Image 1 (cartoon, rainbow, N blue to C red):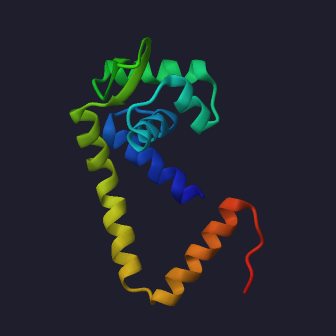
Image 2: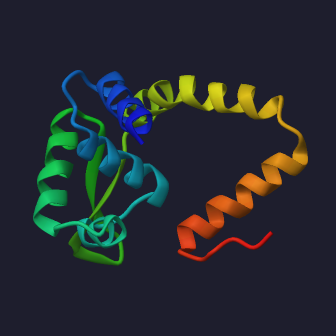
Length: 130
């Protein structure tokens, strides 16, 4: 877990020096969700709406995201990545994606299948069966 947290912090700093891991997490969720509202992001992150709103403002100040009116409801603002945000996120993720691909390339398919089963069990809170 320590290694994972360090990787997350390094990726955040790669996007923008001094960026906190929580801000990076919001940015990655925006990338994953596509255009989304603050409420939707907060719900998916299981986080406080105020925190997410402040974080989106910070990302907007860095020109990494943009807010535009929802075409279906002008009162609602949709948040999405800018080209700069997408490029920086891609740059920050690239070393880790290549590393994972290189490592998994050497693993037998049965081992990867077992890992997938274990991760799914962990994520769902179930006990894996042999």
